[in-house]
Length: 307
Image (cartoon, rainbow, N blue to C red; front, side, top):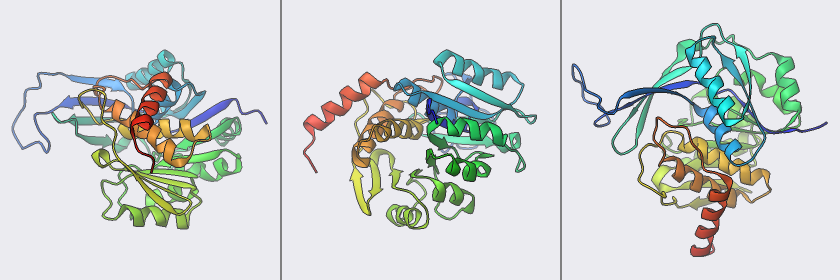
């Protein structure tokens, strides 16, 4: 079977309205004036992963449900501009959207509109089977209706990854994703004991690698029963927004991992891309290119003592 797609990204297409606020948490007030403007742009987790992979030269295809609405048009336009193949399944409820409140230090609070999806939403099985069968790897976002596709994806022969985002280690919605994937990403933000949760994912599922990102504290990588901690990489410019940093990390990690780099070195690629993403304003959609990524990784390795 021909594998003409390097990575199929499943789900996670949406539109964000970005609001820069004077502080987070935002104290109650009758009103605030927003001098920086309130802007709406295409790009949620699946879009950002697809964008990051494409910027690194991989052949990417994105599958999700989109509405026949202005938000859906923004998603279609973004993919067309970036040269990313998109299969859009009609979503009568409309395109997914969110509001992101961004503080002066780049921290973000996201408000997700869950009314744009329903538990009985499904991707056509024939579409999933055909696209997964043509892909080397599938990255499954945890947005609806990804969970229903997991058995079909496992049958396809492609390797799988997923991002559990700020999972608390207890919410059962995330478990099918965590246990089906070969590579599992998650944030350590809501985990009192990241290593415990990471080992539980590996023990109960099929993950070869579990990666927990920890912001300024770096990242933890569990592979071959060994936990490794990588320090954070200094951003190349001032931090303006953390939105998309985890997606950039996942894209760069997968780029390296699919090119047979070790999990630890793949995570180094991820930390570089994640740091770069923090320097991109929330109102823009940009990703680190392959040449810049390779140069920055080489510079870091040249100045960092071997573990």
